[in-house]
Amino acid sequence: MPNFISQYLPQRLRLCAACLGALVLIASCGQNTQSKATAEVPYFANLRPDEAWGRRGPSYKQPVLWEYRRRGLPLLVVDKTTFWRQVRDPEGDLVWMHKSLLSRNRIVMIKAKAPIPLYRAMGEDQTVIAYADPMALLQLGPCQEQRCQLRQGNIRGWAERSALWGVDIPPNL
Image (cartoon, rainbow, N blue to C red; front, side):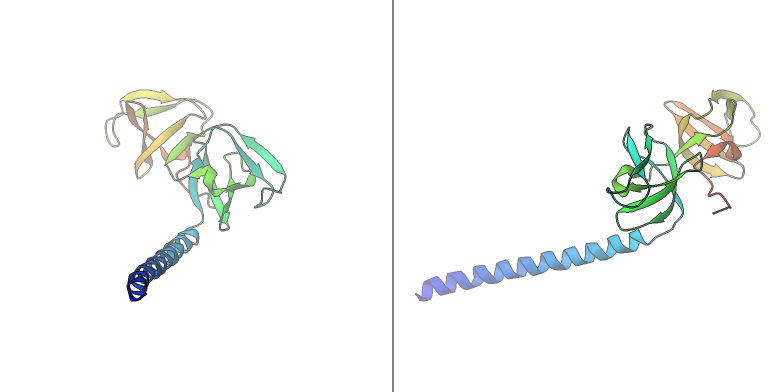
């Protein structure tokens, strides 16, 4: 009998210590998640899937107002709950989406009504290397003054900041 108790007790203590360690780890991760959930609103995000539903309220029980079918579409997050984000689309409509549908990748949409030029360099070099069509989605690089660098495939050029949706937070929020 003493052998059984001496073998069982250390095993049980190790199990309790492992459980306690897991609880501490979960609690600390929960605190980090909580601080991220309360961070900076508004901010831009983009659609992760090819199709996503925008709902009237922050619940799967709420009716669908819009069905979005454009992966990468930039959306402005204006409010949030633990699992839901209220977003404004480029047309100005407000809907709620589950946070799993959104990504923080920096993608912008061309909001001009005509193709816009992409310039070779930020400064004096005004050589046009390509044109970006209206509503095109491009990866956002660094922004300086009134221009931002945009990338699509192997094309990299600078565009006027005012022609882009997904860079600057609108002032009327």
